[in-house]
Image (cartoon, rainbow, N blue to C red; front, side, top):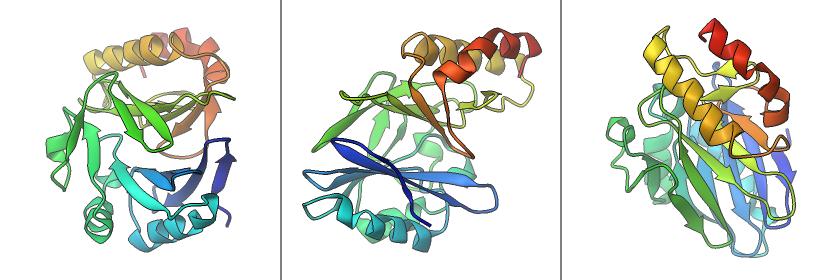
Length: 216
């Protein structure tokens, strides 16, 4: 199945789903330089390697995995991380408060607002506390089209991520998602979650008060 999700002026976005938990693995490839960022090496190294090979035609340069970025520490999002890092030699990045829980030594510990830059594009790290302490969304602002938000397990169609019925964690997550995503980006922004299908901020915005009231 074709993994190409978006063919943008500066880069391509590819996605595959792995494991019985339908984890999304995203690959961004800069068209001019060939540098790539992979978001969430969730599982199935051979499938991820096939994803990398499939992106070779997206660039006029030699493709190179420049960074493996992880949205959060949960096991289902990192099962292929150690193998992929060893196979490619690519450095890793994750939220500062989750990094030590990952199965590799994380080279870059990200804080809210940090810029993750490779040759050809950059991503902004948005710290969304609650699902895990160090959950990070990665945001690509396309200068010629909608913004792309890779939200991990912090925002899905229909609600925010699981906070194990902890009111404090839920309040923190719904507040961060409201202030750092919905207040910061327009309705046209595309949301690419860690599982399942995507959505837009515009489709979800009318339900924010409902989510807060129901507590999950």
